[in-house]
Amino acid sequence: MGAGALVPWGVRRHATDEAGALVGPWRLEHASADGGMARIWRATREADGEPAALKRILPHLVGSSEARDLFADEVRITAMLSHPRVVRYLGAGEDHRGPWLALEWVEGLDLHALLASRRAGLPLEAALCVGRDLLEALVAVHGCAGRVLHRDLSLSNVLVGTDGVARLADFGLARSLLHTRASPRGSARGKLGYLPPEVFKGRVHGTRGDLYGAAAVLWEALAGRRLFDHISDRARRVASWMGAPRVPVRDVCPQVPRVLAQVLDRALELDPEARPGTALELLGAYEEALWRAGLTPDREALQVACWSARRRLVAPTVPASGPRAREGLAA
Ligand SMILES: Nc1ncnc2c1ncn2[C@@H]1O[C@H](COP(=O)(O)OP(=O)(O)OP(=O)(O)O)[C@@H](O)[C@H]1O
Ligand SMILES: [Mg+2]
Image (cartoon, rainbow, N blue to C red; front, top):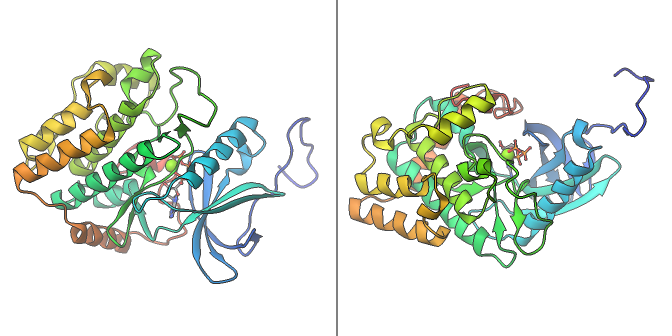
């Protein structure tokens, strides 16, 4: 819309951020990535140079009260959490451009970008490290004082640092069982392909829904392809994955030991009651499977995978993980 164009009633025009601007104590450096709801800026604190990821609602959504409510919940929930496998809260505020949320800056790549750059799964011991980090994050999130459900587990919401640590990010659809407003029963929010099938039958996305999402992420990290092949038509896609038998992980990644494949299969059961009851139970089964198979997650291997992927990628200002790029792994 050009300068001076009419803005319809009820729609406020929101100026967009620019590199160099100051947002609270944070100086914006460059836009780093766009998600479906928000833009992430790389920023640094004026006072001490501390780096941060500054999150803003996408400009065209700032006027939406639903987007602002979700963002307010995200801020509240992120501030409740404190765990080394969960992206750390640094502060939040609001200015004339809308609300903002500052998070620890994870130098690295999200898991979608990492896998897309390889066009293959991660080395087994590196993927096992992602699996352990993610399950530890879920144990902390589900078990925190606010009893939080993430509800948007996906490759792009797992950030792999150059330190070889995977961190759970993006609590934009999260819900605290104690504090936030309840979402409508069975409302299917989140990313198709990671959402637990029960939400399409009108059931609530509960603890076991997150376990399904975490297992789907780990399956894809091992296999280097989508758990359910990309079908662009949403209705057909939902129908295919509610009914189609899943490809066993060992068919695409034969080095996965049978005991571990069984753990994944259980967490990916279509019926939530057939999955492990809690994240702690799933983590226990996972650790036992690794022990029985004589495998140890290798943080150095994950670090190497992250560094090599970054070398393969071009400029850091190119959004490597926009919504379009996330449609298929090797976008
Ligand atoms: N703390 C961080 N450090 C570095 N990069 C980050 C950080 N948080 C997010 N990103 C990058 O920005 C992308 C989008 O962030 P985020 O997932 O929070 O936005 P969103 O709009 O809520 O996403 P979605 O599409 O999942 O709804 C991430 O996939 C990741 O690539
Ligand atoms: Mg996201």
